[in-house]
Amino acid sequence: KLYALAGGAAAALVVVPYAIKARSKSTRGADKSVFEFGGPPGAYATMLSLPGVIFFLYYACGKDFVMPGANLRALADMRLPEAGELVSCKGASIFAGWFGFQVLLERLLPGKVVEGTDLAAAGGRGRLKYKINGHLAFWTSLGALAVCGRRLSVLYDEFPALAGSAVLFSFGLSSYLYATSFADGALLAKGGNSGNPIYDFFIGRELNPRIGSFDLKEFCELRPGLIGWVALNLGMMAKQYQNMGSITGSMALVNLLQGLYVWDSLYQEQAILSTMDITTDGFGYMLAFGDLAWVPFTYSLQARYLVDNDPGLSAPMLALIGCGGLAGYTIFRAANSQKDQFRRDPSHPSVQHLQVMEVKNLQTGRQSNLLVSGWWGLARKINYTGDWLLSWCMSMTCGCPVISKGSIVPYFYPIYFAVLLIHRAGRDDHFCTEKYGEAWREYKNKVPYMFIPLLF
Image (cartoon, rainbow, N blue to C red; front, side, top):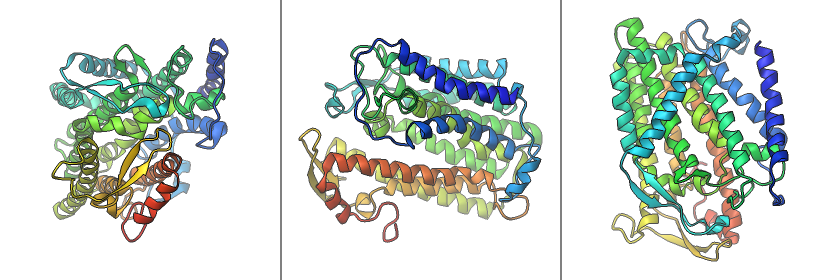
């Protein structure tokens, strides 16, 4: 059954995109595109393999089996899951209820309406309006989760089925997004209209798909998956309390560090409107799966591991890890806040002293300013450095991977995160080279380091 399920998924990832394109009545031709992620073969392989990574991480470090250290040979003893474990009515109901609850919060909770970035560079007109109430939705969700109390342990029990539901929903949503991108007047993302159905299905064809005023991409970027990450962590904590009658220091610390990270994202919701995910990338499988399945079910790995494999770290060690995490968060937040404040008001007292380099946007003909001092004079992606340091501290709550009964698997997050951030920085560098031309190379001479001052 498991192999049949995998075969069905492999076929669906080809048949569905081609069938949707064949049924579309759009006469718009393909754009000249530079393929990313290895082009159509790479996109297909990514869509097919990443759900398997989620389930591998679950079965490689759980209650019944933990890969010791970095001993890959021990994986021969890891059991394969039954197909019925990956999907259940209970898991699907919980996922659907959570997603619907987040939609209701976005629609019903009060929030200010703000404008996003100018769509002229993407071929659109004007600015889209967004309702900003993610911070209130975060606290409302926490209140609802608190009411559930110990019953949240069901999230541990149904973890693989919840992940399976998220994967299936992401595929269904991606199919809807690809189909609706052929509607007349849809603003297509640069690089999302290559003409290859598999690649466009993956990368995202339409830039800002909406149902009325409901922006699907901005909603999925922050709400169901990111707040769902906190919900899963709390579920793991409830399960540990159910098993042990207490909460360990590592479990409390990882919940605090990751909860702080998620809270920050929701508190700074408006800042996301100027990120590449919103302004540049189309909304397809890449973002839908990443937002709804990958983030909550891989980033909650440490809390789930600690339910059955707590390392019993000492109070001084936990304090040291906590300080490291807070240092990473401080770098991440201070750098991003400086940039966001400068974008909103360059004359603000906190940023008016910063040195800038004036450049011309070759795509719009407008002048722009690039920061070359302050946090952004230290490194071009100094915020990523803080983010990565924080991710290491999150994993360190699980103990040393090569001492005693430790495992490298809970360290998947910072290892993967390094690859992600380097790839994202490379994409940004490519886009900025196209946007600013020779001026971007001059800027890189002024700020030569990408991540770590004086080193890298």
